[in-house]
Every structure is written in structure tokens, then in C-alpha cells.
Image (cartoon, rainbow, N blue to C red; front, top):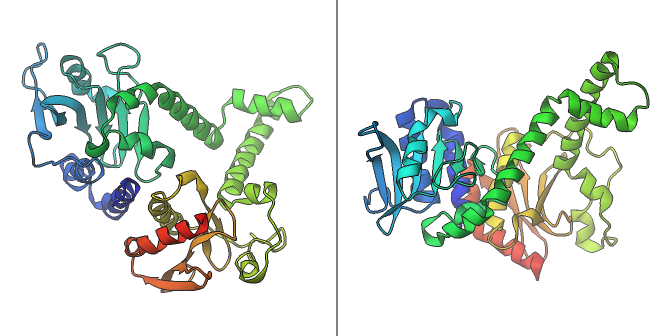
Length: 359
């Protein structure tokens, strides 16, 4: 499988088993070991590659263990510490990582609960693990822009120098994105004041603050929904008038401005989209894969262009769900899905569909 497909498979497993995986040991067996093996590509049964319960004498802490040490050429390259499944990750609870980072050759430390993986290095002080991660991978909400950097830590593409050189940029971009997400959800007074000053000419009183706090939150929510539904891209893009069968493919997108009324994008559709996107990423950059929802189907497109369909998810039926792919003449073929994992059975058809759109 392509690297992005391996991540998508790990995501599917987490979604399927997360609720019944409650302990730290269960998370190790169900999620962390498969992640090290399937995603990063290391042999978890080869002690020359992965050492479980790794021990080193650290000052007065004799015999303290880190859950896994990933080795290359006889040297420790990554340390992995696991915490309770479904529990919050707090770096202060991973004191072993701090101590081992200083006494081994490891430049990467990983703190995980099997669902979220936090990657640390030593940007602030040499040989001392940073207090904040430079990369956070959430398998329930994968940021595709991080996939190329994560791949550099895999066995077949290991490039530690490149990861370290990009770590500072990744760290600050990640923190900014997480800050934006927090402000969108629960805006702080300074954030509310910033937007209020641009649309309201009066004094920023307590009453104005309370009024605009809810308005900023609602505006942020609507903005995110617009992004998900592709409305902004549609409004800002221009396209040539469709002809022939292309007109049929654009029918949903060219309806009246209220065409999105009554449309509800489901989590299952978004997960199906992520799987198709992961497959298509072997042919094009992930940011070129877009989606638009409609009342009858969920379209996955190249360059957010309805004349360049990659696939459709037809999940609106009461009992049956289908994946649609297209041939060279844009004829649609529906494939019955018993589960989202069945999308992988049609990976080559999806890739071929992308290649045709590129030609």
C-alpha cells in the first residue's frame, strides 16, 4: 500500500475498535504496535529494529522503562511512550521520555494513546526534549499536509535530518492551527475585540462583548461549513460552459444559490472521502483532491472541478451504500460497499480515474 493508504487503514482500525480499547496495554497491542509496523514499516518482532520495554540507567532512576525504542544501525532513533487509551496526553506524565532523550542518541520522542501521536525533538535546547510537539497526528482527524513529513520517519524513507530541519516550521504552524481551532470554538475576549473593531464603530462595552462573542462564534462556524461544502471555492472559481456529458456531471453544482438547503454531510461520507483521497494521493498532491456534497451523492473531484470527477459516494440509501467510479467516457459504475474498508478494493480504479483527469 501507499503510505497514505497505510495511515487510512490505521484510521479505520482506530474507528472500529476505539470504544472497546480501554487500557494502555490494549492500546499498545491494538493500535501502537500496528502503527509502528504497518505505518512506519518497522518489524516489531525484530529486536534489532524495535525494542519493547527499553531500559537504560538514568541517574537515580535505575531500571526505568520506555515502552518502545526504534533502532537503526544499532542506535536508538525514536522513543515511544504509550498512555491509557482514550485518555488525554500530557507530556508531564511522560517523564521517562525526558530522561531517556538526554542519555540516548534519540532525536525523536513519541507520546501516544494509540489514537493521537505527538512527536517531539530538541529544538529549544540540544539533547533536551521540547515541552511542545512539532507534529501531532490525530488518526481520527488526519491532517494530510503532515503525511510527507511523517513518511520521512518510516523505515523505507528515513530522513531524520530533513525532519529536524522542518520541525520548527511544523511546530509553529501546528500551534497556530490549533489556536485558530480553539478560537473558532470558544473565542477569547482579545479575539472577539479584534473582529468587533472591524465591523462595529462603538465602544467595546461589556454588552457589546457579550453580543459579539456569540456572533463571532456563529460566523466562524458558518465559515467552516462554507469551506467544507466548497461554497467559497465555487464562488471564486470560473469555468468554461459545460457541454455534453460534462453538463450532466455539473448539474448539481450549477443549480440555484440555495442548492445546499437540506444537505447534511455525514461523518461516514467524510471518512469515505479521506480514504479515496489517501488512495488518490499516489497520483497527485492531496490538496488537489476536493469534495462537494449534494442531495443525491457526495462528489470527490480533482481541483474542485465538477468536470473532473474522481469518484462519488452514494451513502444516502437506507440500507445500501455505493462507491461510483468513472470510465474514460465518464460513464458511472456503482460498486456495493459492505463497509468503508471495501473502498480499498477499488483503489486501482480510483487511481486510474485520477490519471485520466491529468491527461
